[in-house]
Length: 540
Image 1 (cartoon, helix red, strand yellow):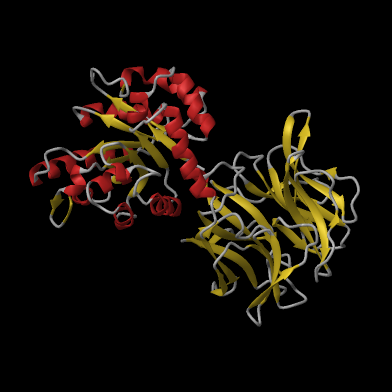
Image 2 (tube, rainbow, N blue to C red):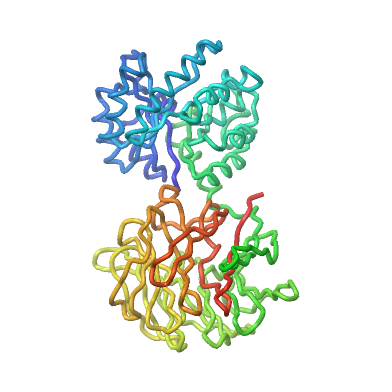
């Protein structure tokens, strides 16, 4: 998950060595850092970096494993400094350059400023750079031509310049940040949370600012979120840790989620909502011998009767924390499940069990943990799963196999983060996803791990390829590249479903929706290969 720190307030209050500070915020979980860079001397502002010294700062940022996607720029002449800005793109990889609304908001000066910003945007676009305007309270409070001055200036830029909305400043200026964000959704590229003491109700996490609403917008639009921390009751790192924990918690929390169990028709593109749930349900399996879906919710398994629109909990014996990795036996007489547990002796664990379809005693299959189930061979003899195991090189995540009756497991893959193994209908191949190419991509290999072939290769993170019963189609879940790390498949994200032929041809996006973890973790194709089930979500 991509969250960042804006430098102005944080560095103004930072008392640590700069490299130590960078490493500390990276350890908290932050991945982005947004500096302020000036092309002229500004005495007394150590938190605004001089362009001539940026190479030194860049070295420390990279050593701390942080990334600079955007920076605020201070210039007395943007045209004269444009070559230096282009160097920040070509040599340091910075893509977004943030400017402000001028203090003089007369029509004449706003028009002149818009021309200047558009001229810069044209110069940077050739190199992949963008210009963003950051709001403060004054340009939200002031009005021009029936709009906030901030939005009017953006209008004058004719779509060439984008918005970096600061929710705290917007609220300080008397505007509802959520409404401001959605009004300008077509041009917002970044979200700030200004945290300052002058307006206590605007403080992130402790004031009246609706962080959840702003977060939902940013997650839906796939834009970075930056803590613009400028109010410290204690150590700067403690305050920044609180901001990260708040944002990260919103990203992980599913306590206030609505779930929709859907069917997608691959021939017509029609989506049918089977049922709306006021809780999180995950990972539907579509039974082929009955008009039912099997899914997990709140640690239990449920069967949903499609014809009667009713659900029933399945007895899973001692397993009370079933996660979204479960598959049906080929004859659909049994369900193999992954059950999690947290103990003082072992900490977190996940092991694979088998229970009767009608419910009953759970039989342990894997003694090793953590193991996350995804595939059952067509002959009923073998389970395939993702497992975290210590190797000589350290902790590795690979595809493993085990007899359905239990016994010793065997390792099928090595190298990269490997997940989601699923047998082809003839049992000869295993489909899975792996980071071995850098991003998470879909792969196919023989059931023994040989003849591995990469099946997707776009600039996205692709998870859980599911092959249709007729072996002709594969549907998979796709995340935007910069929304998360390749090894993450998180909930509460704007994601896509893609479809391709089983030979890898014909790849195309079929759907964009709010979902992610739990949407389509396991195979959910209908028996006739015309439809599949998936879960979409809504935060309330």
